[in-house]
Image 1 (cartoon, rainbow, N blue to C red):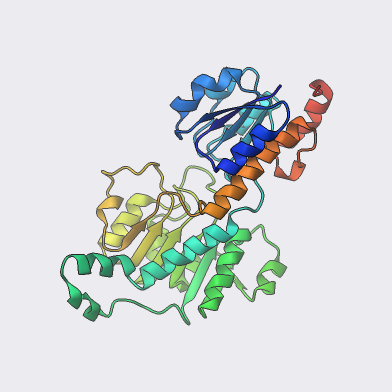
Image 2: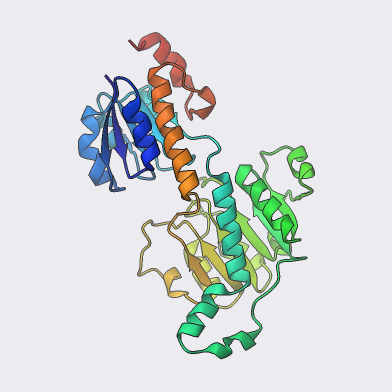
Length: 330
């Protein structure tokens, strides 16, 4: 009888699916932290986890663990090597939140361009005359540079084109046809894209320890450019971003993700209030997307124990073949 540990609050639809599966038991630990779920790992046959780290230490304590299912698509906080050494597959959800993240990206872009938060704060401070700063800008005819042209990046392109923006994009792993199909100009060099951009949106995984967008890259942007990150914290050097905002080089920045989550309230970045918008890693957490993610993550666990887990959803699919030989399910 598989015992499933759900680490972090998820949409009730996923919990209901697990509880309705014959022979499954479920334990839900609502807080999203390692300390909250780690004591329950030794009894877990399956782990459904949100954004908390899952390191070799936690994996070693989960002596019965057979499957980990991520409530999302990113897995940079999971020790894949430690899972693979134990022949434990890591499953992710499919395309369940691209629309939500893309819409959130456009919402942030519009909020920056139209200075929504600035005007709101000014009115509350009694400054109705802020309207005469003429500081809002139009999106039409401006250039949007999209970093990462996967499902989310392509959806952002479609939405931006509806506002008559000129869209260019960089992604070395996507075929030329994907750009051509949407009428998006392909940029082969990031620096070249940054230099022509009026706005930048980021939709890439974090790779390595060095930020992709640092002080030098921010300096390439036009004065008044806007930058939005709804991908992963650490892709933008936050100290460099704080400096660019303080120097009024950028028109604004909006981040749904941070290097340190929850946010470090003492960081230099959070001192930038007028031209910085922050949201709490919530771009993909609309009610609709949360329901789809919870159901997909739960279904991956059920499918694993029913020996029908889709290999394309497994980050380390080689372990599936090994398990079929070494650890056949009853």
